[in-house]
Structures are given as structure tokens and as C-alpha cells.
Length: 326
Ligand code: HPA
Ligand code: ZN
Image 1 (cartoon, rainbow, N blue to C red):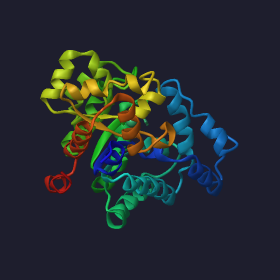
Image 2 (image 1 turned 90 degrees about the vertical axis):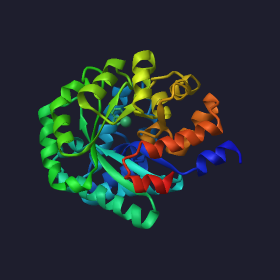
Image 3 (image 1 turned 90 degrees about the horizontal axis):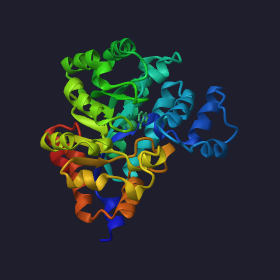
């Protein structure tokens, strides 16, 4: 079969998707209208034209503004359900969804509303779409560790509705070690641990995500290629990198997709996966990320199978779930 068909049709897991980043402009405007929230853009077209980012922060400013339309349990359900339908269409068998509760609780939305709506969509995805979906709660790293502790406390009544915690938002100036104590607590609680590191930040942030936070996967991690000792560590320990090529392109981490270092990472034996990050903002869902990356970098069918296998191996499914997919 042709490579594009293989990429589209092969079963895969998506491990790096921010559910607030899957909010398409059309749904955003619909929610703004029904919730009486005003957006600083007159139309869907005007909003889309604002999606011209120069770095991570220029994106985050617009992303947090967009998330302000999410108020009710049904809103959280609807955004997750829309993503999960797209995931099914891309032959995603397993999806691990990041969510940013602090973005919502800071506006007065209850934790129960956020997790309740997202979790109900995940349950419906299993029964109605055949997509196995789970939630990972992310702490915003531009806020304090005390704020993260309060967020964890507020989420613990719903402990059975999320499988782990992550760390996202503005990376540079907010190193992983800022969250050492809260991650240690999450580890005691048996939560899975991941963190964004080495997206814009230096290899030192990847080292501290591993050695201080003790994360199981690194989100992005593309800056690791600057540090040969780190590359060796990631390979030896089988630490997965959840790489998001179109995100890296849109946020100017690489000037062109053809210059993305994914092939270097794969050839070094790292457990690389391909993911969409914030598909509504970065120009495509997971299959578009696969297609455009393969086209630009010349990856082959062998790489495709490796990436798909990596995605299941690096997922937080139990052994039986992995066996079903692999
Ligand atoms: N990096 C950091 N924080 C984020 C991202 C990202 O790519 N997407 C949504 N929040
Ligand atoms: Zn991300």
C-alpha cells in the first residue's frame, strides 16, 4: 500500500493532546454565544487569522483566551467528544488527554464540572467509538507549586477519573524542579507522571524532569538532541518522547518541517511518538501530523510501524490493553 494510506489507516495511540487545544473556532464561537461570553475576535475567520505564532507564549495567550468559553459540564463534554470522534477517524485506539484545570477553576468553574464532563466523554468514547480514552491532569508551570498542590487537593475526590499528572504552559524560567514536592506527592498516590520538557527549554530541563520529577515520558523533548549524554540516557531507559511536529513548526521551534530532528531522534533509538498537541491551533490532527512529517522528512514505512508500536508501548494502558493493540 502507499505510505499515506498506511499512515492514515494504521492503528495508533495519541499521548500528547491538550483537550482545550482541540477546541475548533466554530465550536468556540457556538459556546461563546450560548454562554454569553464575549471573545476578542469578531468572527471565526478573524480568530483563525490570529493563529500566527512566533513562540510558545504567543500561542498560550490565545489558547487561554479561547478556553474561557468553557463553563458548563456539557461544554467540557462537547469539546472532548468532538476530539474523540476525530481520533476515531484517524484510527486512534487509545488517547491520553491532557487537561488544564487551573485555567478553569481560576474563572470559578468547579473541578467537578471540568473532570465530570471530560470523563463522561471518555466513557462514551469507549462504548460508542471503540476509542480507549484516559485523562492526565496538567499543572500550569507559570503558577506556583502551592497552586498546584491546591489543584491536586481539589481533584483528589475524582482520583479514579484521571490516570496521571503532567506539567505544561510557559517552559523557560519555570524548570521542572519548581514542582518537585507536588510530583513526589503524586508519585506516592500512584499517579502516572509526565512533563513537558525540552520544547523551548534546555536539555537541563529534561534531565530534571527525569531525575527530580521522575517522569515516565517526556512531552516534546526535541531539545534533547543538543546533549549526547541525555540522548544516551533516554535511549537506555526507553523513555518515550511525545513529539508534536506541527506544533514545533507553528511555534517556530524548527523553521521548516523538513528541518525537524525527528529522524535524528528515531535513529538514536529513542522511543519517539507523533502527536498533535493542540490540533485546532496547529493545523491538524494526528494523521495530518504523520502525513506532513513523513512527506517533509522522508521517513519510511519502517519508521511508521516503529512510531505506531512506540505509541502503544509508551501508553499507560495495562498489559492486556497493550497486547490488544500491538
Ligand atoms: N507547551 C506547553 N504548554 C502547552 C502546550 C505546549 O505545547 N500546549 C498547550 N499547553
Ligand atoms: Zn503540549
